[in-house]
Amino acid sequence: MNDPVLMDQIVYDVDRCPHCGVASPLLSISMKPQRHYRDSNADTWWHFAIECSRCHRHALCYGSTAYGETPDIGGTPTLVRIRDIYPSVETASEQLPEKPKKFFQQALESRHAPDGALMLAASAIDSMLKDKGYKDGSLFSRIELASNDGLLTKEMRDWAHEIRLSANEPRHADDDYDGATVQDVDQIIEFVKALTEYLYVLPSKVSKWKGAAQPSSQS
Image (cartoon, rainbow, N blue to C red; front, top):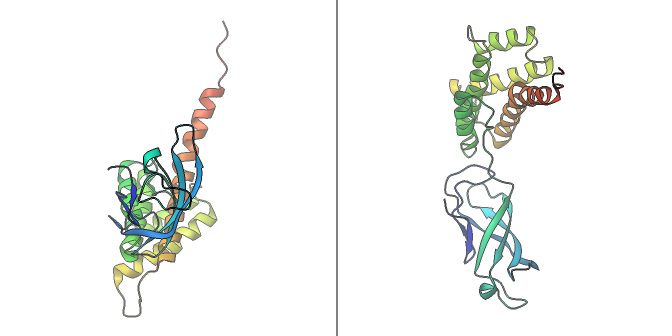
């Protein structure tokens, strides 16, 4: 992918909206570029806000214009090379095993389709439990067994069951089901991130810390 640029009120070359995850989003200016400062290379730095046409949520961009591209004081640049976008596009942790990582990445990229994102995130949770050795029975029984064995805290068990039930609704498509919301997806994604941190990231950090803290053997 090329570096994102602002050209004539539109931001180009952003793969996905940082909020809803829709591919090739239409991102247009909602607050015109504000001059920040000029650095030692004579580049002028700007910040401005953009809006996604799909989810209508906003992001903040930060970028620069070169000396010959910078308008006079009071003018607005027609081209800005964007260096940072806040929030950044979220990706699944590198600490995750390949299968749950694939499911979770797809969930992150499907936020604009909440029912699908719910089921993909639930599959990521299921895959994490299987990776930890909980492979038999239903997802309900695997959550219970993981909790009984101390892998999950009581609070995480209760949260996992809420997620499991939420993901069942679009799968069964009952008559009284009105569809998942973005808030439902945000909740399950936060849980997957917390579970990733708890099961993979923190143990990895502790292991590295213990290795670094081992005293050197004395002769």
